[in-house]
Image (cartoon, rainbow, N blue to C red; front, side, top):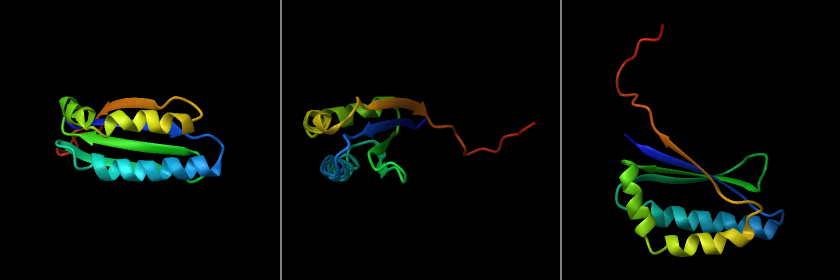
Amino acid sequence: MVYTLVCTLYTLDDPACIQKVKNKLIEASRIYSKDKETLSWLVMQDVKDPRMFKVVERYQEEGSQKYHLANPYQKTFDPWVMPFLAKPIEVLRHEELDTSKDVEVE
């Protein structure tokens, strides 16, 4: 079952902070996407509120996150990004539904 994290980052109200976080997320995606058992590490910016970013991290299973957490880049990411955020990162954890089989909807 695919294990997915959806993280929300909300920056300070400063165009320079917004751009720095945007660039950092692009860099992080390029690094983390290469981690073992990482299916995707997607970053996006809200279309109406440029201060809001979402990260969707998809792993083969919950245990796969250990490779992400062991990546040396991980130890530098939070300390770097936190000063540019207006509030703590929100992390929601999900298991993707299996859509490979037909279901009956009553």
